[in-house]
Image (cartoon, rainbow, N blue to C red; front, side):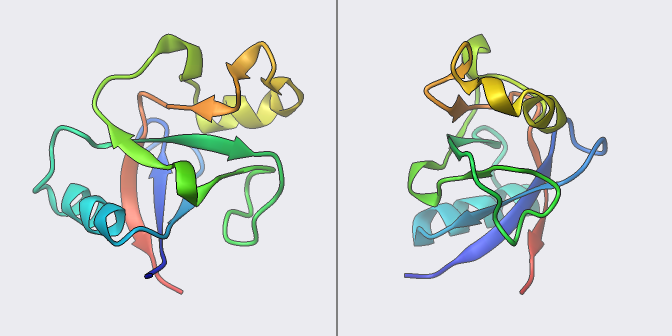
Length: 116
């Protein structure tokens, strides 16, 4: 199984990059198609937040569990948030804010593949 890391911003071109790790060959291929412009529908990233720091995502106190990540076109308002807002409200994640720790930032846009 391959591993690759990608970055997104919420919205693209604004704020800090949020770096996430993919461990599925199919999702890695999908992310690369999003970056190349070949995939234009399911371009936003969603997954379950892990409330721990990951070395590859230094600007945030949380990361996305690679086993829960998928791409979507339209999401629910209950899981939408900018990355910086989620960081500012870290203690509320998985409570009233981002119930269950599910995060689906509607404005997420991949910016690059992060090379090791």
